[in-house]
Length: 146
Image (cartoon, rainbow, N blue to C red; front, side, top):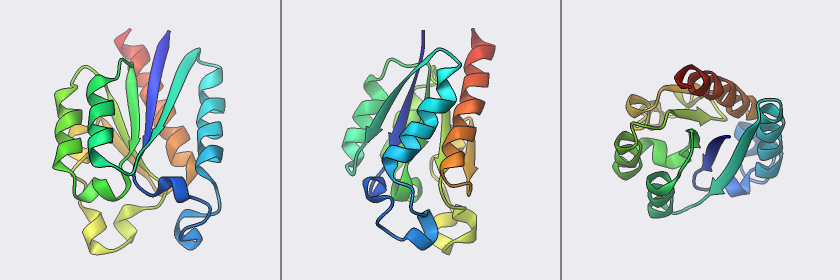
């Protein structure tokens, strides 16, 4: 059975409460529900992981036995060489980077992703649908490998 890991980075546990003008009122639970609904017809097991701690995210990537990863590294997108290197070390697992907001229409410092060069692709700006689109793309890649 295929298994995908969805990693939510720092402060995403506060969705629905923080900066709703940017991130909307959707909660993390609602995003997870949308991902689960998107995978149900594909016989895919989905694991969700959220952490505000860089090392925990690095450990999760390194130790996961999955077919693919969806990651929203949040603020670590622009700062974490450690997460970038963990993804690069797992060449056996396709990774799709997702963002709720369009990071390229925001502050200048958000325009640079350290993760994008080691991910298969990046989807941003579609709210929770960024995750759903990421899952669909990831499942297509996984199916091509099988």
